[in-house]
Image 1 (tube, one colour):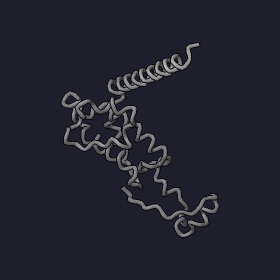
Image 2 (cartoon, rainbow, N blue to C red):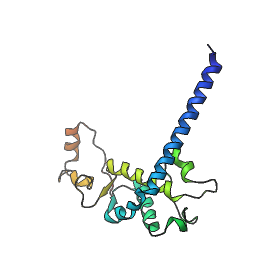
Image 3 (cartoon, rainbow, N blue to C red):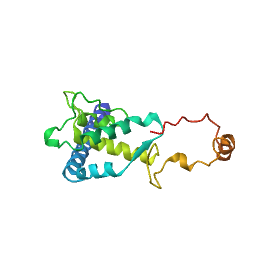
Image 4 (cartoon, rainbow, N blue to C red):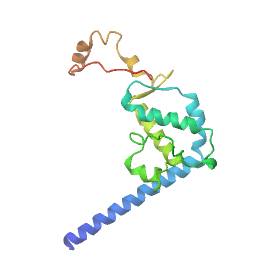
Length: 173
């Protein structure tokens, strides 16, 4: 057949095709979001009060705060965030999106960043790391704990077949 050389060539071609496919997906998502869905960002963020009980998930909350600061600024005035702005990337922008979000000058483009923030927010809400005030399904996960949880932590853990761990610290922000 072709041996090792052919196998390496096929692997390189597959990797290149996958990279092109992912780039095309990012382009289509960006286009659809900027042309249509983006206009819902302001009403959405205005309607929801988001909270987080754990500082480990603060980057997504900080990114939401940043988006809210820029909601009134049209893209025509700035497709990029102000260079002096502290834009959270870790925990918000996946590595495969980094090149689409941050340009070669280190500037962060708003549209792809907003997409990444919304995806990170969706994932955090699904995992209940971030919750929505007044919601039922996406409410504060601590409201789902039994009222006597702290007093009977070891009993509740035993009922779940889990090893009892020290209490988690809540920041309530």
